[in-house]
Amino acid sequence: MFESKRMKAEFEPPRVGQSETRKPLLWIKRDGDEVFLVNASSEALTFVRASSGGFVSSDDGAHATKGDWAPEYQNVAPGEAVKVEEYDGYYDLDYVLQVQLQVRSPSLGEMDLLSTPAKGGVKTQVVLWSAPES
Image 1 (cartoon, helix red, strand yellow):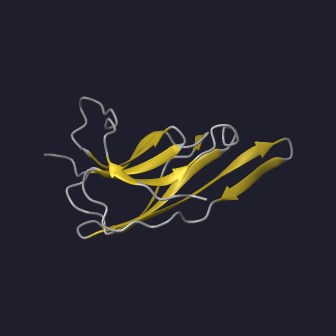
Image 2: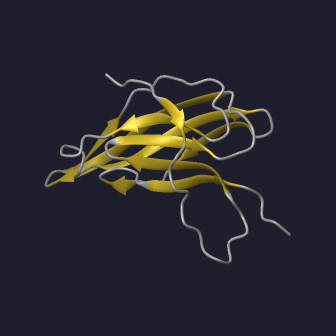
């Protein structure tokens, strides 16, 4: 059973190129078997929930998988991380998995965001960038 978890985000932010003028607002960080959504924006997220999906291939073709929605979070503060997924370090290694997020905030509105699929599950990935600085 998936247990919700909230914590102060003490993860290193994703590395970005020197020419990148945008900043990560929302990003995913894997810590062991747990996957967190980090709110690096300047406002609270009023609603967050996540699900996962993916596939595994075999000799007979591909077999899809779809997870249930994880518990939802409300009022995710700036600088806070919430657990959105957990992987099994052994059984999930052969699966190509991605995280689907539903996020709501006052200035960003309601968004559906998808991580890039990755074998063994998502590692670290920015899912929402700030506007470019001019």
